[in-house]
Length: 399
Ligand SMILES: *Cc1c(COP(=O)(O)O)cnc(C)c1O
Image (cartoon, rainbow, N blue to C red; front, top):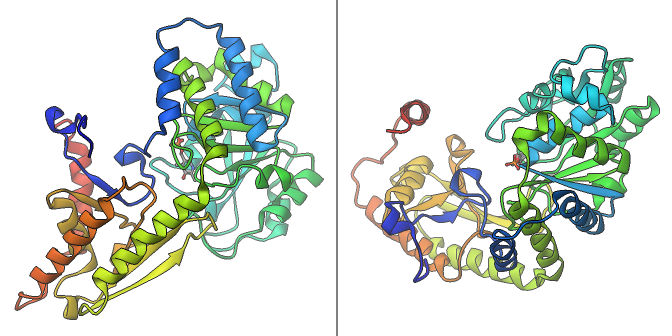
């Protein structure tokens, strides 16, 4: 929290983000260069086609692609690149979507990649008027299944790289690309959260899509990178279904500035600071009853480690999810990474902390765990009821 923190005056809780890059918390800390660039351009007029050309060059340079395109989000990027594989540069077909009559309209997607990133990935495909052809099962997918799913109606093959997807049993990307290309089908990679800006295209993907607002610290946006003909056809969707997903001048220039800042960032120093936070939390948690913490590498090999905190309720005197909830309810509120809390652990992610916040997180952990030790009975709330409460709360908005 800084002196100019607007949140208290707005009645918004001054949450500390120890969960990573979460859309539900406002994604990431936007880098100063992007904020400046957006502020300077917002009052001015530009010829948007030229600004899109500039952004295309910036995305291309950062990714090694032939061309790039900036849209509203990675999710929009999935929809619009799928649309591009269906219509090509045919403006009449672009205006007809999502009516896909006469167009190839099937998109091959591994069942283990049918994840929810806040919305279902399949829906982003269907928005273009396409149909998803699932391949394999939740935790297995073989090359012959990919090959068997491709028909003369296949417009594209979509591959998701994410901690959300099944972590084993999936056809590797290189195999997936080889099979798709062998049948003339372009491959789109959803790499929303992946730090590797060049590897998926270098591996042969035709398109790679990133979120501007995640690790890059840009404004909310999506970066589409890849083959020039496909990126052009993606850009042209702005005359059709892309209109409602368009990025404004602030997003384009903010994303360009964030890409440049990313190239100049001292990644070693960032990593060291994140490691210091993890080490601090390890020292706070060391020797506490029922708490077993270890540093875990990112599941998709991003240069990012998290602290996994295993909580044994009988000894810690509370359950993992009750510790998470106590952190979130505290002063200040600390939001931990709890996707897997029912398994008895949660994560602390240092990548979106402001300097010094690791000490506040450490203090809150110690306070809650000290307090729990006073309990006669461990606090283990009903996990199923907690999940139902969270679901019900969504439906109460705006109350
Ligand atoms: C976050 C995410 C998305 C959606 O990205 P947005 O830019 O927020 O639309 C898509 N796919 C994956 C794997 C993600 O992690």
